[in-house]
Amino acid sequence: MAIQLKQNAAYADASQLNNATHILFVLPAKRPQDLPHASVLDARMKRQRSLYAELAKSPLTADLPEGARASWIVLEQKQSVFQRHTLLRKAVKPLLDESPAQLVIAVYGDAEEAAQAAAEALYVTEVNAAVLPTRKSKSKKHALKTIHLHGHKRADGFAAVRARAQGNILVRQLTVLPPNELTPALYRDRIAELAAKHGWDHESFDMKKLGKMGAGAFVAVGQGSDPQDAAIVHLRYKPKHAKKRISLVGKGICFDTGGHNLKPARYMNGMHEDMNGSAVVLGTLLAATEAGLPVEIDAWLAIAQNHIGPRAYKQNDVITALNGTTIEIVHTDAEGRMVLADTLTLASRQKPDLMIDFATLTGSMVTAVGNRYSGVLGNRPDMLCHAVAAGNEAGERVCAFPFDADYEEELDSDIADIKQCTLDSDADHIIAARFLSRFIEGDIPWMHVDLAAVNRKGGLGAVATDTTGFGVGFALNVIAAFMATKA
Image 1 (cartoon, helix red, strand yellow):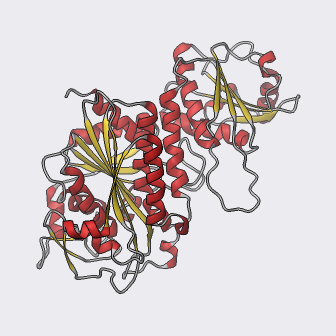
Image 2 (cartoon, rainbow, N blue to C red):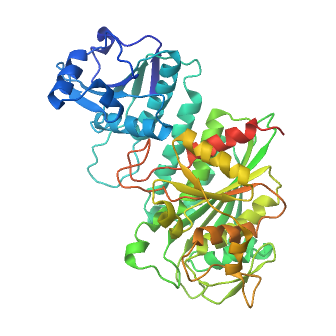
Image 3 (cartoon, rainbow, N blue to C red):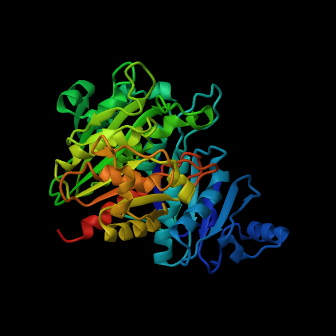
């Protein structure tokens, strides 16, 4: 059930807060006069020997005399969006941990400050108020029903902000599901339900159809599973008056054992999250639909599992992809680039104006940037610069990596057109991107997003859960920047 938002353009005063049980005060660098419950704030700061300005580094939470709980935070214009989101997340978490039915957000400052603070506080509150799927028999988490926002009012009810939050929540709801509840068949059922609900065109390319088409790279991975329920799913959001067309491609490996090159238990644990790239595409598609963005979006989801079985592909196999490229298999745990290869070919044949793929693709990207950032690579250097800016503006940071052609020398094969990967991990995130680029037909602007930041203990940026939903905010900002360019 959606959270109800009640707005009041006026600053909150004591009378408006009398019945509040949980209050988030979002303050500017200059302390406001007549701040409700100022005596409690002052007493708490005195006890901690801290100053008002230090609220820009760490929030403060205290119980009020009437029994309510409040958090105070200062947001400064010089702070990055990531810093502001992080502070808001830390401020609102102790309030949401008590599972309140209602929460008050009180923002202060001049009109510009209040507008930005209100949007960011609402976003952070909504993404963290979401109740994610759990199978605990005695879960005490209850949904937040109402947010009362004081200090700024927007006529559209923050539609775009709330759509972005819903996209992030969908990513996390899908990603945390256990693998026995999100097999390719069950995942495809969920996607069909979403398509029917939101009016998306929906088409599935199952294993039989893909085999007849010659999509050998995808089929090589899917054939190791029983049942043969893998598929490439195509969704389309087509609003009226759309002037540009974007294709989003997502890796959807519902569970990754590593195949014949079996992962050890330590690295197989958590591999139900290997479908996160497809979830990011779905979350972005949902957010764009809810916000009514005037851009056509094709979503291509490569949904499969990487299992062991008599039919599973193996090292030294030579596979023929949909575009006719022959691939020498080097490591069966590099299945993501295999399912994406044919999916990228299908997507590129639609001749979109821009292609972006999302995948939890390589461990070397995590080695390179850790789990605070994700990495971007692509065939347009200027696009990567814009992508870094889009990530900063979204509070979802990305780092651009080299994409020089000589990296592809590592994939030279004696018996096929290209090797799938190498047995070394050196620069595998770059080599994998070079591999993927071989399957894009035509000179289409393309960006590959290697999602290193999908899971971080204790949360990241706006999100307090380990599963971060990283990518939706970034993708929406990239799309917005692309829509703003000349046709």
